[in-house]
Amino acid sequence: MPVMDTDLSGAQRQTRIWHWITAVVAFLAVYRGIRIPNRWSATQAQVNYSQGIVKRGLFGAALSGPLHLYHYGRFALVSFGLLTLLFVLLGVLVFKTLRRGAGNGWEIVAVFAGSYSVTMLASTVGYFDILLASLAVLPLLVSDARWRFALALPLSVCGVMVHEIYVLVFLPVVLLPFALEAIAAKTQRERRRSLAAIVVIALVCGSICVGLAASTPLTTDKVNAMAEQIKARVDFNPRMDFFYVFVRSARANVSMMRVIYRLGWYRMMHVQSVFVFGPTAAFLVWAGRDFMGRQTSVRRGLMLGLFLFCGLSPLLLHGIATDVSRINGLCCLALFLSFLVCVRMLGMDALVSSPWRQGVATMLLVLTASAGQMQMLRPDRSFPDIPQLKSFLEQVRHRSWAEMSNDSD
Image 1 (cartoon, rainbow, N blue to C red):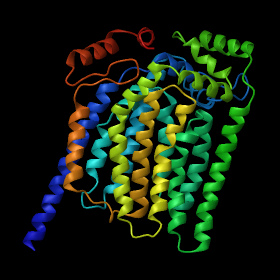
Image 2: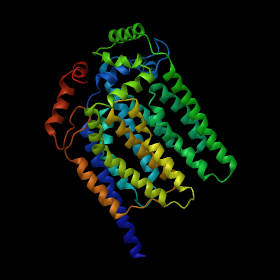
Image 3: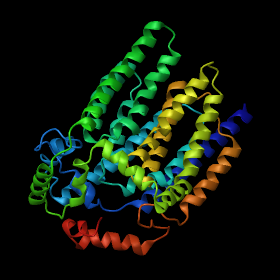
């Protein structure tokens, strides 16, 4: 018995160490990328349905008007609040998933927490990505399948109406628990119920997304009227180039990307971004493959396929969008969420922390905590960078939010 107590105490100490490592590297990851919301995100948040049903209009119609987010200061505060909410929800999901284990899996959490994906989330404060991720995490916290469906359906509809990328980035992750329940179902009735939930959510959200994508682009006059309305309402200089998204169809986006992919500098951006985000994505795929390989179910190959599909589906955005690092960062987030869903649904028994994986995790954390560059046309902050932090705090203290917004892209 004393030996068992000593072993348990050692496991608890190791888990506590990984808790502290996770907290420290998460702070560094956020610190590398945190900034004030840029003018693109502030402009996007002002779009509503004054010119008819348009894509990305729900946030402005539901929140920007009632909360007076046309004041840049209020928009910035709400944006930081949404970013904080996302990190809190991710923390709750992690603890609800790993609390029943013997400390296994925390090196995986630490690798993601210290990754450039978290840095990218901090850097995109103000973007709809933050809200979309929160809408996706909320139903993942619910264990009961019926309540999860009741929550996932309306939140997924809201996600698609806020931004159409929800369908490719987060909807597969939201549907993953139902798919795993269908595979593990003991009766045909349970299997049909899980599959029905997937079909209903996918059809509703897919129909909305296709309807928005297939709708006729706004005329130049309507776009100009929208831009002028927003410009007259806000207290910052809106990004006028943002409004081009309403005059391009989905087919025009694909045609544009075919041309862009021929440019050497753009292909080089992809190569650079792979070096930034690739190690984290590869580590998460390795962890997921190892976890699935230890399952006793004969359908573990299908489960692994679902995990990879849901985690890598954001990469499809490369065919219609130019935000290379943003897409790859979202891919790492989707992989991490998919991994947590698999562990939460299939149990902790197959989650084993090997010394080899912990060593690789430590190496990755050392690399990501050091200096580097984010591939989003601006350098990140190495640590420690006290002058940069002091400059940011001085701006917040002595300058108005509207003045600060003019410095952002």
